[in-house]
Picture (cartoon, rainbow, N blue to C red):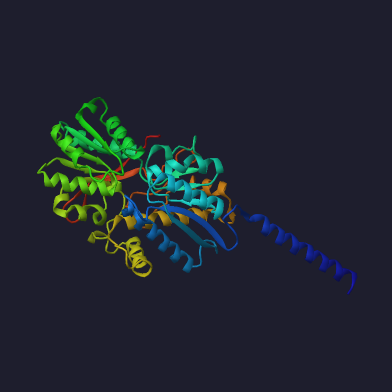
Length: 406
């Protein structure tokens, strides 16, 4: 081989080595990520008092099976590791530690419930593990200054409470409001938001009573609010207690305007068990399409969702808004992972989650999209007032956007 040939060969070898080195340098991994896999951890109440939410986790697991069948995210399969925490904060702590310290997940995703998320928030932030799209709307989960590794998904309970206050001031200015609320950050934030929205009319709240998630019934609380003379009932609850409240109100012949929060607005998990006739007239807010509504028959996003349910979760109720919720949260997680590219570090996961720009999900209502910034972690800031007609939710007015910073 001539000297020139040797030089060219050596040069080519050096160039190849540099290219390989550069390619390797572009890939950054923290625990839970590799060329082949991304580990994501989650606790779900597969049992216990909030087990109605279990279907959310089942839908999310099915969505990841679909993504993996399609080749994964940027060529990597998503391993969604799920453990039952029974909606019990001590169990959430135990299972979350297992996910982080034994399974070594890259991030946690959609831990379900306010109290369970509170129980692990400081731990995950101390370990600098993303607590991504926590399934709660409590204000402490959209606080990047104090908890930079935590981002909630659900519409803010404070904002939602303010929206109900606006609705009541406009349509029922002389209302006497009774509030049933869960005795945790969920219920307290709703109550605070409602009162803040009422402003100097906060005395419209004539009675308020709380319950513990472990209480078997809320019958006595409903009677207390009725006896206080309330003609509006605001239930800041989770599914089991919301269904109980609707049923009890009908049973005693009380006829208040009944507002339920978005967490308890599932037709299949709440309104059907309570009795569809009993639930007629109930008011709430929404931000997703209703698969049972003929309006969305030809909608491309709805068609994708229905095809997914038919193939990957055929036993699931396609009309349940809990399954719709599971679908859109999983879709948003995949969006974040795609944006991460080959930089699968925990820091970059949060960076990408905090830089979502006008992301339209398959099943959010037209005009509603996801935008986040490093100083505004709120994923959902837009709402549609709705009222149940005995079969499905019907829209009231247009989309309401809350631009306030929290």
